[in-house]
Image (cartoon, rainbow, N blue to C red; front, side, top):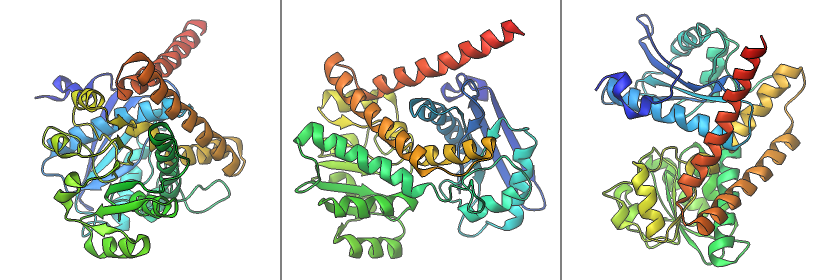
Length: 364
């Protein structure tokens, strides 16, 4: 299948590949939409099995960022980048400087930040070569690591789901199965869930980090594949995407799915099957938008010459929770899966942005 034939390519404005022989950089940047502003989305470094696998991932992630930024009501489009390689053994300052030079050639249509396998420190090396990176750790506008704010948004969304399903304002008495509990977001989220009274069952491929977070949260640890068989009230996928698929769906024993991972649904049909099974699915790109909201404050400060504003971030998080509740309510009232409701909200906002662009062009 060629790039243009891939269903994931649909409506992308551009896809760019970069190679740097000296550092070994192999990167793909996908720009899905700039209708609401420059495309913004993090960089993931992963040891993909093939370049085709990397391309498919970046296309899905890029589209997800357009929808995420629109639903969060941010003046941003959507894009994403991936670096093909082992983040544990192949990272170097020179690699990320080369990545920064690659971003710079796009002239500001895409801004990158950290994601799986990439740290704020890595992005700071890219910053030496380009201004088009965010989520930085220095300067008055810097927002730093977005992971804690991402976790906060997922945590609050979990509370919204608990309120709707169990009519309670905390998580006391609920069991939550956390996949990827030792990751950037998963660890922060696990601590918040524990403090809110949840009983945790968790797994992660990083066994050492998993033991540490399990001790902090009094959690039960299971093997990675066993997490799907846990008798839980809520399943929280916080690792890579597509863990809700044909193989795992029959094994899940939960009433809700609320997690931080991107692209949790292997196909849209999985979302329909969750709905028909009576499982409340919190659309991933909605509930995990806290991190990009945090980054948006940094971009706003950079554009205006101001400083990072935590109150602005808090206001956006409050609005995001209202959207989560609206999606749940509309799903129930309209008899439609939650992912379809979320998509309709995002697509309407993206279309509004495209209309504004068209009107400006006509006026010119």
